Image (tube, rainbow, N blue to C red; front, top):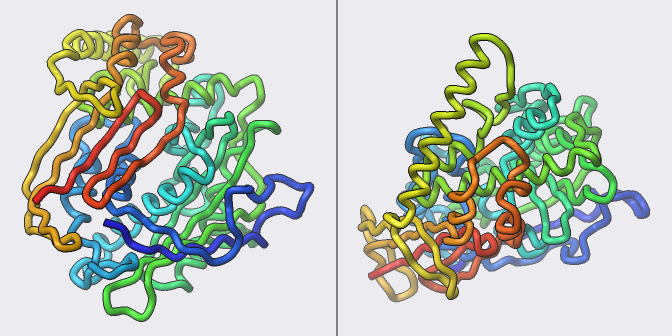
Length: 407
């Protein structure tokens, strides 16, 4: 189940050599076509929109595969069905945002050899707390918003990715991508929030997806730019250990949550208190913080102790524990000549990774120094393997998610 997506990479927005970042050798400048696998897109949306730090039930875990399977028109290129294109403004915004994140990350995964991917806001909060810094609270929108994602590739280079999606048209997409100003606007401003030291800094991308409708004059298209910018939140070279800690925790917490280990996810994402930015204080607030930490650690330890009660399965000869969900679609869809009436989704965390977590208290020290070699699996590539009726997302041997379309 694939749809063609038009991609345009604006090489003129990159700095002129020898200024950095250099235009990636794996990118092709100008217009090109990308075969977007829809099951892989849905897995990517479900993964990216599940917060690294949250409590309770998150609809992000189910939203993509329950709802969006019916949004894709049967055209050979990526378009929405008229019913989904004509949703009210609020629902259209949610769909545009979700597709606007999923499609660019699907395109970038292989081209940048991406490993772990963290929410930009979580990354800032966690690093600031680890180094004792005070970071301005990122806004939810506008120039002060944190970038959508911080990603580390397999070579240890860090990339900033800001994503936009719209169904309104190319002119609105250009406004979303923004400009240098002054003042800077749109994604140009938002991707300038974090700067890494020389030798660690990679691409700083703004991605805009324009989504077409069945029967419309234009199909969907993705535009990639890398405009220059001045940054606000600086990570020093001696603080990169805390950057590693933040991205490992973000990916591990999200993976644990999707696999059904909610208590462990909470302890992983915010080990020092109620939020990722929690840190030691004094008086009554310090006592409450310590009580919160003790309770979170106890719940996580109990959950990991009983991890064998979870669904066990094997993927690519690796063993995972997590959950499997089978559900009937609200209405059947047709893929090629096959009628799809149900879907199975599985989420799992590697048995070895869970074992290492169970042997160590979930403390506030850099997680790679506590859990050791097993965190290397979290740093490995994020990949998707896709077929006509299925897809699989993997992060090394630490996490796997699968979707299968069934008749």
